[in-house]
Length: 307
Image (tube, rainbow, N blue to C red; front, side, top):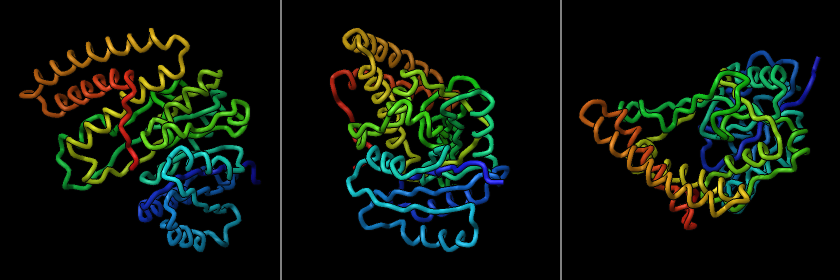
């Protein structure tokens, strides 16, 4: 018996092979045979570069009434507008966000639904584990930057992300939230989006048994890219914190003080650990970068992630 529809919302940009791997992983989900799956794929490439992949999957599922595909394009280079387009097109009771460089564990969606039902949450955020090519040095593979392991099931989520996250459609209607286009080139739209839901009383819970795997290409698995990534993370955190708070001046001053103090502490620990453990030293160094990014957000400097 078919119960509910799940809309799998994917914003994609020039990753056809990884997109195919993702879609296959959703088709192979276990424990959800009573649900239908609606793929909502929005291409942020005006040349429709995902079309061949979408057509291939459409042919694969054409005889299975449980699956359907909506494929559209959003031409402006803006991740927020692209995600909003997926929400506009989605018709399911549940919205499942997953990024086009990820794929889902076979029980991922099943675990999300169970946690939402068990703990009466509006949003369930899973864990994301990275995988690399063998060419990436082990001390980088072992660092914490791409490893997002959430708290135990039902706890308040440790972080806010759109990679491997399920939302009740009724919650989106209730809270009337969209992704802010101001974050469309800098990233951080997910943290802003879920911060607003939480501020309006939405229940955002952890589901660490729902696991997705994110591919990290060589060009992202180097020191320069890691520094850029954590700088944006710290920067966007403070930006969202200030924007969502009425006491903006107090928050801004506290972020400057905390950012500088935590930078100094983290860089000292990183230097101390360098001859002892290279990976731990790297983790602390990246924490220092993330913290020094906070004062930059206060003065209005927001580096672009999408160009």
